[in-house]
Image (cartoon, rainbow, N blue to C red; front, side, top):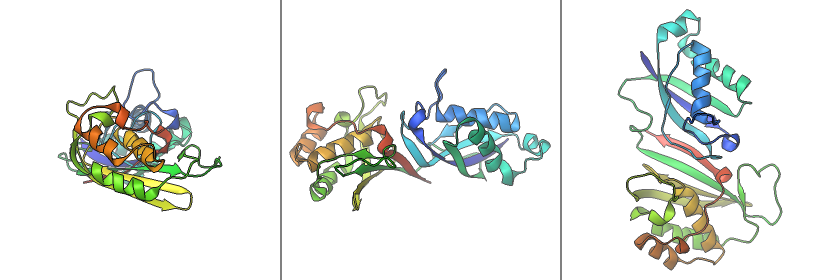
Length: 254
Protein backbone atom coordinates (compact mmCIF):
# COMPACT_ATOMS: atom_id res chain seq x y z
CA UNK A 1 0.00 0.00 0.00
CA UNK A 2 1.15 3.52 -0.78
CA UNK A 3 0.13 6.55 1.27
CA UNK A 4 -0.81 9.79 -0.46
CA UNK A 5 -1.21 13.30 0.90
CA UNK A 6 -3.89 15.31 -0.88
CA UNK A 7 -4.67 19.01 -0.60
CA UNK A 8 -8.31 19.90 -1.17
CA UNK A 9 -10.38 22.98 -1.91
CA UNK A 10 -14.13 22.98 -1.49
CA UNK A 11 -17.27 25.06 -1.29
CA UNK A 12 -19.02 23.68 1.80
CA UNK A 13 -22.38 25.36 1.21
CA UNK A 14 -24.20 22.18 0.16
CA UNK A 15 -22.45 19.78 2.52
CA UNK A 16 -23.04 18.59 6.08
CA UNK A 17 -19.44 19.22 7.03
CA UNK A 18 -16.35 17.11 6.47
CA UNK A 19 -17.04 13.90 8.37
CA UNK A 20 -18.80 11.09 6.51
CA UNK A 21 -22.29 10.41 7.87
CA UNK A 22 -24.74 7.86 6.56
CA UNK A 23 -27.45 9.42 4.44
CA UNK A 24 -25.85 12.89 4.44
CA UNK A 25 -23.88 14.78 1.82
CA UNK A 26 -20.35 15.29 3.21
CA UNK A 27 -16.92 16.22 1.87
CA UNK A 28 -15.25 13.04 3.15
CA UNK A 29 -18.03 10.91 1.70
CA UNK A 30 -17.75 12.59 -1.71
CA UNK A 31 -13.99 12.05 -1.78
CA UNK A 32 -14.19 8.40 -0.78
CA UNK A 33 -16.87 7.74 -3.39
CA UNK A 34 -14.80 9.44 -6.10
CA UNK A 35 -11.62 7.54 -5.22
CA UNK A 36 -13.50 4.25 -5.43
CA UNK A 37 -14.91 5.17 -8.84
CA UNK A 38 -11.44 6.14 -10.03
CA UNK A 39 -9.38 3.14 -8.96
CA UNK A 40 -11.87 0.53 -7.80
CA UNK A 41 -10.68 0.57 -4.19
CA UNK A 42 -12.86 1.26 -1.17
CA UNK A 43 -10.75 3.57 0.97
CA UNK A 44 -10.90 5.60 4.15
CA UNK A 45 -9.75 9.20 3.86
CA UNK A 46 -8.41 10.96 6.96
CA UNK A 47 -8.70 14.75 7.09
CA UNK A 48 -6.62 17.26 9.02
CA UNK A 49 -9.66 19.24 10.14
CA UNK A 50 -13.34 18.45 10.58
CA UNK A 51 -15.01 21.50 9.08
CA UNK A 52 -18.62 22.10 10.11
CA UNK A 53 -21.70 22.25 7.91
CA UNK A 54 -21.37 25.09 5.39
CA UNK A 55 -17.69 25.83 6.09
CA UNK A 56 -15.31 26.05 3.12
CA UNK A 57 -11.66 25.12 2.63
CA UNK A 58 -8.86 26.36 0.40
CA UNK A 59 -6.15 24.21 1.97
CA UNK A 60 -7.68 21.17 3.66
CA UNK A 61 -5.25 18.23 3.83
CA UNK A 62 -6.06 14.52 3.96
CA UNK A 63 -4.33 11.21 3.44
CA UNK A 64 -5.33 7.86 2.02
CA UNK A 65 -3.69 4.50 1.33
CA UNK A 66 -3.94 3.00 -2.14
CA UNK A 67 -2.74 -0.15 -3.86
CA UNK A 68 -0.46 1.38 -6.50
CA UNK A 69 -0.83 -1.71 -8.73
CA UNK A 70 -4.57 -1.13 -9.10
CA UNK A 71 -3.83 2.36 -10.37
CA UNK A 72 -1.24 1.06 -12.84
CA UNK A 73 -3.63 -1.66 -14.03
CA UNK A 74 -6.05 1.05 -15.12
CA UNK A 75 -3.22 2.97 -16.82
CA UNK A 76 -3.60 5.80 -14.32
CA UNK A 77 -0.05 6.71 -13.38
CA UNK A 78 0.88 8.52 -10.18
CA UNK A 79 1.01 11.87 -11.97
CA UNK A 80 -2.63 11.46 -12.99
CA UNK A 81 -3.98 10.66 -9.55
CA UNK A 82 -5.21 14.19 -8.93
CA UNK A 83 -6.89 14.54 -12.32
CA UNK A 84 -8.38 11.06 -12.13
CA UNK A 85 -10.17 11.68 -8.83
CA UNK A 86 -11.12 15.21 -9.88
CA UNK A 87 -12.88 13.82 -12.95
CA UNK A 88 -15.43 12.06 -10.73
CA UNK A 89 -15.63 14.92 -8.25
CA UNK A 90 -16.45 17.29 -11.09
CA UNK A 91 -18.94 14.95 -12.74
CA UNK A 92 -20.84 13.96 -9.59
CA UNK A 93 -20.42 16.91 -7.23
CA UNK A 94 -20.88 20.02 -9.41
CA UNK A 95 -17.28 21.22 -9.22
CA UNK A 96 -17.76 22.02 -5.53
CA UNK A 97 -14.77 19.90 -4.44
CA UNK A 98 -11.37 19.62 -6.10
CA UNK A 99 -7.99 18.11 -5.25
CA UNK A 100 -5.33 20.77 -5.74
CA UNK A 101 -2.38 18.41 -5.43
CA UNK A 102 -1.40 14.90 -4.40
CA UNK A 103 1.93 13.32 -3.54
CA UNK A 104 3.38 10.18 -2.02
CA UNK A 105 4.34 10.36 1.66
CA UNK A 106 5.76 7.87 4.14
CA UNK A 107 3.54 5.67 6.29
CA UNK A 108 4.29 7.77 9.38
CA UNK A 109 2.52 10.79 7.90
CA UNK A 110 -0.96 11.40 9.32
CA UNK A 111 -3.02 14.32 8.03
CA UNK A 112 -4.53 15.03 11.45
CA UNK A 113 -1.90 14.04 13.99
CA UNK A 114 1.18 15.23 12.07
CA UNK A 115 -0.18 18.76 11.69
CA UNK A 116 1.72 21.49 13.55
CA UNK A 117 -0.97 24.12 13.18
CA UNK A 118 -4.18 25.00 11.37
CA UNK A 119 -5.23 28.42 10.15
CA UNK A 120 -8.79 29.57 9.54
CA UNK A 121 -9.82 32.77 7.79
CA UNK A 122 -13.13 34.51 8.38
CA UNK A 123 -14.36 37.12 5.90
CA UNK A 124 -16.66 39.97 6.93
CA UNK A 125 -18.23 42.34 4.43
CA UNK A 126 -18.59 45.59 6.38
CA UNK A 127 -20.94 47.41 4.04
CA UNK A 128 -24.47 48.82 4.22
CA UNK A 129 -25.47 47.28 0.91
CA UNK A 130 -25.24 43.60 0.08
CA UNK A 131 -22.96 41.96 -2.45
CA UNK A 132 -24.55 39.17 -4.51
CA UNK A 133 -21.13 38.01 -5.68
CA UNK A 134 -19.85 37.60 -2.10
CA UNK A 135 -22.97 36.51 -0.24
CA UNK A 136 -21.90 32.85 -0.10
CA UNK A 137 -18.40 33.46 1.26
CA UNK A 138 -18.70 36.40 3.66
CA UNK A 139 -20.81 37.66 6.54
CA UNK A 140 -22.28 41.08 5.85
CA UNK A 141 -22.26 43.39 8.85
CA UNK A 142 -23.97 46.61 7.71
CA UNK A 143 -23.00 48.86 10.66
CA UNK A 144 -19.46 50.32 10.86
CA UNK A 145 -16.96 48.23 12.84
CA UNK A 146 -14.21 49.70 14.99
CA UNK A 147 -11.24 47.77 13.64
CA UNK A 148 -8.77 48.97 16.27
CA UNK A 149 -11.06 47.88 19.12
CA UNK A 150 -11.35 44.44 17.52
CA UNK A 151 -7.59 44.11 17.10
CA UNK A 152 -6.94 45.15 20.70
CA UNK A 153 -9.57 42.76 22.09
CA UNK A 154 -8.27 39.86 19.99
CA UNK A 155 -4.93 39.97 21.82
CA UNK A 156 -6.70 38.79 24.99
CA UNK A 157 -7.58 35.52 23.25
CA UNK A 158 -4.02 34.63 22.26
CA UNK A 159 -2.35 32.01 24.43
CA UNK A 160 -3.56 29.05 26.48
CA UNK A 161 -7.06 29.50 27.89
CA UNK A 162 -10.24 27.73 28.92
CA UNK A 163 -12.45 28.36 25.87
CA UNK A 164 -15.62 26.82 27.35
CA UNK A 165 -17.58 29.97 26.50
CA UNK A 166 -16.28 29.87 22.94
CA UNK A 167 -17.42 26.42 21.88
CA UNK A 168 -20.66 24.86 20.71
CA UNK A 169 -22.88 23.16 23.27
CA UNK A 170 -22.57 20.12 20.98
CA UNK A 171 -18.77 20.09 21.14
CA UNK A 172 -17.49 16.64 22.15
CA UNK A 173 -13.90 17.59 22.92
CA UNK A 174 -12.73 16.20 26.26
CA UNK A 175 -11.11 19.47 27.27
CA UNK A 176 -11.99 23.12 26.59
CA UNK A 177 -8.35 24.12 27.06
CA UNK A 178 -6.81 25.33 23.80
CA UNK A 179 -3.87 27.49 22.78
CA UNK A 180 -4.37 30.21 20.19
CA UNK A 181 -1.02 31.00 18.56
CA UNK A 182 -2.07 34.08 16.61
CA UNK A 183 -5.04 36.21 15.58
CA UNK A 184 -4.61 38.75 12.80
CA UNK A 185 -7.28 41.23 11.71
CA UNK A 186 -6.85 43.21 8.50
CA UNK A 187 -9.05 45.32 6.26
CA UNK A 188 -9.11 45.72 2.48
CA UNK A 189 -11.74 48.16 1.25
CA UNK A 190 -15.09 46.85 2.58
CA UNK A 191 -13.70 43.47 3.66
CA UNK A 192 -12.35 42.57 7.09
CA UNK A 193 -10.35 39.35 7.40
CA UNK A 194 -9.86 37.55 10.71
CA UNK A 195 -7.22 34.81 10.67
CA UNK A 196 -6.89 32.49 13.66
CA UNK A 197 -4.00 30.05 14.04
CA UNK A 198 -3.74 27.14 16.49
CA UNK A 199 -2.75 23.50 16.59
CA UNK A 200 -6.38 22.49 17.11
CA UNK A 201 -9.79 24.04 17.69
CA UNK A 202 -13.06 23.38 19.49
CA UNK A 203 -16.33 23.07 17.59
CA UNK A 204 -17.46 26.55 16.42
CA UNK A 205 -14.55 28.18 18.27
CA UNK A 206 -13.42 30.43 15.42
CA UNK A 207 -16.99 31.42 14.59
CA UNK A 208 -17.78 32.39 18.21
CA UNK A 209 -14.50 34.30 18.46
CA UNK A 210 -15.47 36.14 15.28
CA UNK A 211 -18.98 36.89 16.56
CA UNK A 212 -17.53 38.21 19.81
CA UNK A 213 -14.99 40.46 18.07
CA UNK A 214 -17.75 41.83 15.84
CA UNK A 215 -19.75 42.70 18.97
CA UNK A 216 -16.67 44.51 20.29
CA UNK A 217 -16.39 46.35 16.97
CA UNK A 218 -20.02 47.43 17.34
CA UNK A 219 -19.41 48.56 20.96
CA UNK A 220 -21.85 45.95 22.26
CA UNK A 221 -19.15 43.95 24.06
CA UNK A 222 -15.97 45.05 25.80
CA UNK A 223 -12.55 43.68 26.62
CA UNK A 224 -13.90 42.99 30.10
CA UNK A 225 -16.49 40.64 28.59
CA UNK A 226 -13.73 38.62 26.96
CA UNK A 227 -11.74 38.48 30.19
CA UNK A 228 -14.80 37.25 32.09
CA UNK A 229 -15.67 34.71 29.37
CA UNK A 230 -12.19 33.22 29.62
CA UNK A 231 -12.33 33.07 33.42
CA UNK A 232 -15.64 31.25 33.71
CA UNK A 233 -18.14 29.64 31.36
CA UNK A 234 -20.79 32.25 30.64
CA UNK A 235 -22.33 32.67 27.19
CA UNK A 236 -23.66 36.14 27.98
CA UNK A 237 -20.13 37.52 27.66
CA UNK A 238 -19.56 36.23 24.12
CA UNK A 239 -21.12 37.18 20.81
CA UNK A 240 -23.21 35.10 18.42
CA UNK A 241 -21.82 32.23 16.39
CA UNK A 242 -20.85 33.84 13.10
CA UNK A 243 -22.43 32.23 10.00
CA UNK A 244 -20.60 29.22 8.61
CA UNK A 245 -20.37 30.50 5.05
CA UNK A 246 -17.81 33.19 5.96
CA UNK A 247 -15.27 30.67 7.27
CA UNK A 248 -12.49 28.99 5.30
CA UNK A 249 -9.95 26.40 6.47
CA UNK A 250 -7.04 28.15 4.83
CA UNK A 251 -3.87 26.26 5.69
CA UNK A 252 -2.49 23.18 7.46
CA UNK A 253 1.20 23.30 8.32
CA UNK A 254 3.44 20.24 8.84
